Length: 183
Image (cartoon, rainbow, N blue to C red; front, top):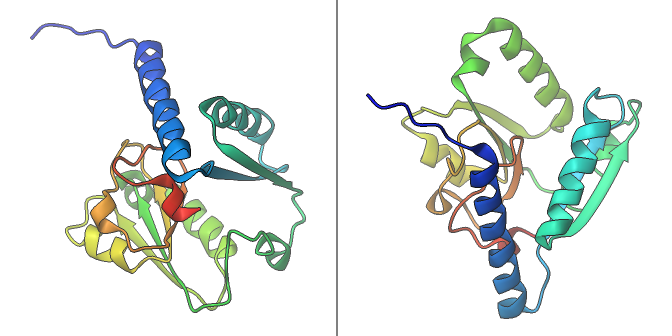
């Protein structure tokens, strides 16, 4: 078997160029600028590096960027005052997770604790392994779909219901989904 060296920066530039072109097409077609929101917590150690990096990247791509950094002492009510998260309805949260979340007890405990704290008490919360045979079925029910898998383009457009709010932990690109639909 021949060794093949993948150069990440070349692939990254190609992907970023495609995203920038897609954003430009959406702006022309719908006369709207697609938006993306970054909600961070100052108490998270890497937030001071990750969030500015992602904000700058999104701005460079042409997104209308919304950024909100909360202190470590934010209450649940304060968090859900952000207008992109609507808690008025009885909503269902579906979390798609990598195998690691299920196979590593420590990672599983940390992830479950974090998500249970983030999701309102009166909402349904379902943890789904990315390899579940019923993954599409779960996704179609989601009002909020949290994708925490390292595999790009894992979620397919036909799995989603209209108006779903997608929270992508790893910033994966989801092909064939018009971004303006969710904004």
